[in-house]
Length: 348
Ligand code: 1HN
Image: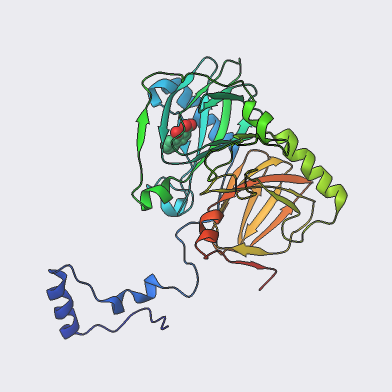
């Protein structure tokens, strides 16, 4: 395949292009090089948002609009290369949400899938499909597509979390549907923690049915993830690129917890990881520790709750200053399903 970027123009050619333009026709040979690139060429840029800055802006937003009026009081993390598109990567969305004490974010549902990753606060809840879960620092919470969900904070402290959604993917496919319930809170029909009790312990109810696209567990508590990372550390050597890295799974089939978004948690020791790149642009947030990540020649310095993005096929080297835990998410399940996902380890 030719990767010819530009075919020479001539007055005759231009006249021809102008003529066929009126018929909504365009010559492939003048755009081929942009359409089919030898490797990914993303507008997505490496970037970091420090939580302190986001938090200050969110507190200010808290004085300007209620969660109820806003429906969701969120500041979108817009990639500098994708401004105005509500995207953190080409395929995914990220935002930081604040629910103040006593507030509710009213019940609604939509075809976009959402994840929450708790950044600050303790004890606020989200309700999903008739069940509440209490959220703690580092918990990974899922809102499946078309599941009714509302949030509430009955504590005395503000609650902040990272929202990750597949909004750009769903928009690309023109498959967005959404509706409000018309009431702040949905009816609660199950005990708090019921889903985790049933599916979170290597057991599941016999005869259980339901979608296999998404995990029946909707809160993966940090306490459990952290314990598993510690056991991995005791049990064997770290991977040169990833340290000890775990994938959140759907206990029904061992697949990804969500159909469109892959979620991961990793423990890294101080010192530099081996270079790594993959085609799934990845959003990271630091749960514990601090360090830097070098993406090509850009160095991103992170500490707890900071959020940074590594674009598709950009080589990353993580250099934690101390033992660190990173949560991350990407569109990897989609790319794997389509046979598109690639990675390369080391300097290859
Ligand atoms: C949404 O439903 C939430 O439920 C957060 O907390 C962010 C961004 C776009 C569309 C729906 C939530 C969202 C969202």
